[in-house]
Amino acid sequence: MQIAEADAERARELRKCIAAAFDAPSESSAVAILNGLVAELGTPPQLERQGESWEFRSWPVDPPGLDTAVAIGAIGLLEAIRDLGWRRLGRCAGSPCRCVYVDRSRNRSRRFCCTLCADRVAQASYRRRRSR
View 1 (cartoon, rainbow, N blue to C red):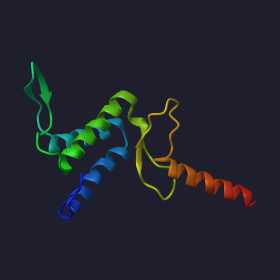
View 2 (cartoon, rainbow, N blue to C red):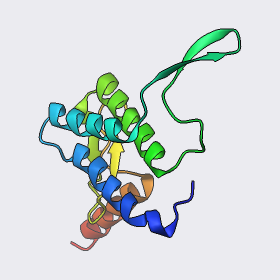
View 3 (cartoon, rainbow, N blue to C red):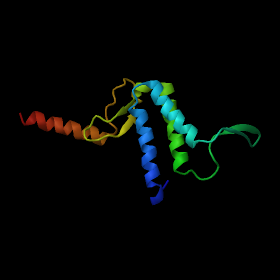
View 4 (cartoon, rainbow, N blue to C red):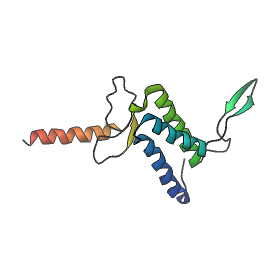
């Protein structure tokens, strides 16, 4: 999905809303933030005929835009909180990175948003130990 230049400011606002859920002081606060975002951006579910059966459709048929993409992402985060728990939402420990992640590891050990940040921190630690 490509965002038009005119949508850049709106994208920044929505990014702040999503980030607020990761920085929320409690699970209920994070859920309230994400529920509010979905209520603002999503559409009510509608029952529609799909071939021989009925199915719920929660999103517009139009190609997804910025608001739809963010609403779907917020639903994904709500599902992660439901399935894994709020403590699995985190911020990257690799300074100065401020990216977010959902920890899906079995032992709840994720600390970095990606292997690039993990490698960068490991290399810095290695260099620091070697310089002593």
